[in-house]
Amino acid sequence: MTAEGHLLFSIACAVFAKNAELTPVLAQGDWWHIVPSAILTCLLPDIDHPKSFLGQRLKWISKPIARAFGHRGFTHSLLAVFIALTLFMLKVPDSWLVPADALQGLVLGYLSHILADMLTPAGVPLLWPCRWRFRVPILMPQKGNQLERVLCMALFTWAVFMPQTMTENSAVRWSSQMINTLQMQYNRFIHEQIGQ
Image (cartoon, rainbow, N blue to C red; front, side, top):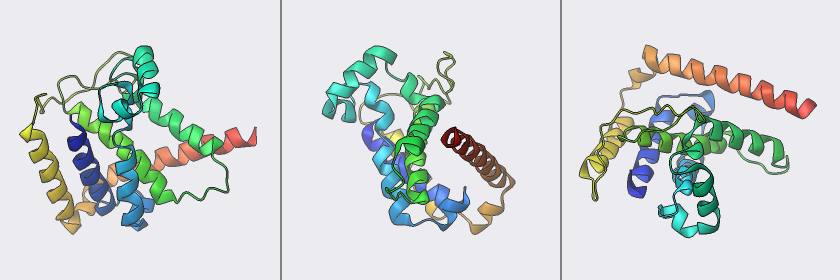
């Protein structure tokens, strides 16, 4: 997926997550925290590709990561999300006031990139270092991919005009419960690490 596609997809995912009330924090969160935060991190997984939009601007970081893990390796995994979030929670000083909705927006942007790359034939190694690739190949890689743009705009339009009853949908309710459970377990893990 292109940088433009990832930007559009992250905005659509942020709008969807807020409107679907995926977490209580996102439901009550400020649009001006969630959407810009998602945009900030939506290109970050491609730091492992020196020719990507971000890789061209940060070659000194991109090249070593590309040599160590290759493109769509570690940075496109759930392990990368977990490690980054853990380091952030453990190492960022308490004096830095990062609103919870902005933090969830950052995670949402990163995850939106991984989800978007799952829509391509190459897929992503969600469970890295396992080599399994997760994919739903509906987007074919081509220059000026119009299907990518149409898909992102359709998702955005649907997220904006999503029926209010959607939050009562059992699939959305289940995913919200899963996210809340994972968040509670993660918070427990962080508090145990801080206590040691």
